[in-house]
Length: 333
Ligand code: TRP
Image 1: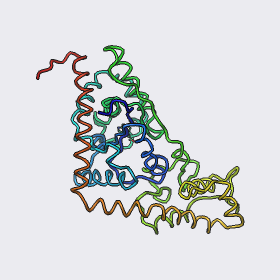
Image 2: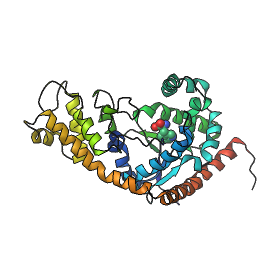
Image 3: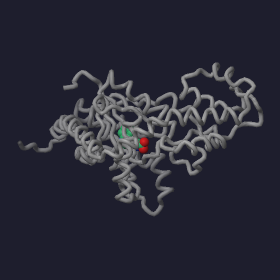
């Protein structure tokens, strides 16, 4: 069906609290891929249960995450949007790949070390083998390109190693995927510590602007953004805070940094921060309105999930039959 198109796959945790960094650096640009690639975006609810979840919240956030992706412009007619647990092959391939992943490799994953430090009372086996399930997500669809944040680079390297190892034993089975780290996300920094990346899990809410934050919260957060003791809106040594606000303003308005420097020549920090907050809130308003509309239409969201699952299952089945045959699992018709 889509034989000639290369595949893009990315997974997103059902957290619903994505930041403007996720929006500007990733989601907003994902549509551009759909011309050239067949794109699958998966709400990874099986990954989510590696830490304890409230069932009602998990269910709600699964709808929200799908709705948020669509509200940000991802068209379900042009992209396959689906939920991980609707495609049983993720768990099946995850198990198989567990048997081709070394204990030592998983022990070296920095995210496992971080998460086990944070969840000391629940260091379950799923938390440990999480990267293998992620490898399964990717390899199941013969993915060429994986847009991810820098924090996922190590997991992606492992997915490549697992694919190469499997291919080395059984012959070409999986495409070895490449990571794609969107250039802008790297540049959206925390509003509280502008030398640190804006992170959706930052404990300081003032440091992070979320796609679904209400207008007044957005304006307030920008007002409180950390800057420097100077008074000029320009790039330069020690001006990380101002530079960050300039890149955010640039990303939302399309103006270049040079244009911004002249636009705000002689303007104080307070007025500039307000302008950035307003530009951000204005740009997010239509996304938020579309999100609210979609969340009222569960039946439609379920249709999108169902169609996505059908396509994903179809593609996954082809890889799975190849994998089972190569391993030596008996097939019955
Ligand atoms: N681990 C990723 C994260 O926390 C989410 C994820 C799961 C993913 N499976 C994936 C990302 C496959 C890319 C491809 O952000």
